[in-house]
Image (cartoon, rainbow, N blue to C red; front, side, top):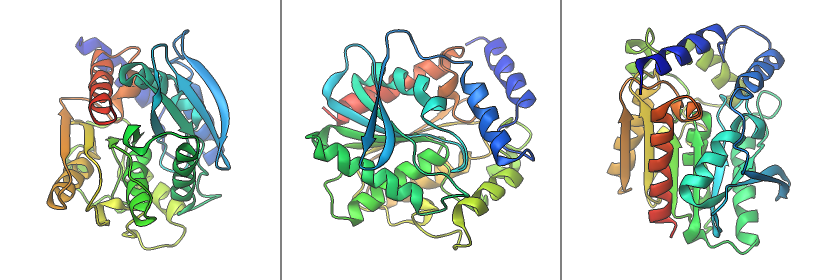
Length: 296
């Protein structure tokens, strides 16, 4: 990677903050606008589907194994983000994992607070099973809020006595609704995307008055026993770095097989910048290898 790649991304992010004082509608539009800078690769196909009542889309790169699938849960603090903002990333994951990727538009807060996102994610997983996909060939993945939602969805699937998927891939996961990790302060100057004030605003919108340590909303506090292997990727320049390290520690203590990958100097959800950032694509290649190894 050239330092220039990373610096250009940081400057772009500083000029277009994702969370801040604009209205929710403006913030959503800004995120869509930023994501449009990274178009989907030309040979990637998209197929809209209704996944158990949830607006979704199959995103498939050439060479994908029709029997291997990823349920992808987009980031955006549970308040912003969509299939549109993450279609490009989903296409790259599809190519790397040789899998079809189901990106879902779960309901967003504040219009639809917790547990709407978890309910929609589990509904989509049930739908995937109903199509004949085998749980042993499905992975659940997501970034930021979607990374936390990935863990919460796995817990909810386990608690519903459904067959568990083969793997989970939380990217820069947000699992602590109170922002009490040490990195929230120690990395504040380095992180151009996530700051505590904006995070707490989104947490309030999502929680809708519920306890911030509600396990399925803040899966750092969930019982993680019995979950499938996890690959956690995080940048060392993130305020949410400690969400990943604490999640990995708790999961390991619960007997979960965890691979924690801290990426030096990388920003929040750096994988989304793969079209212009070498490390972003390198990380996606590792995600693909992990999914192929676990969801054979």
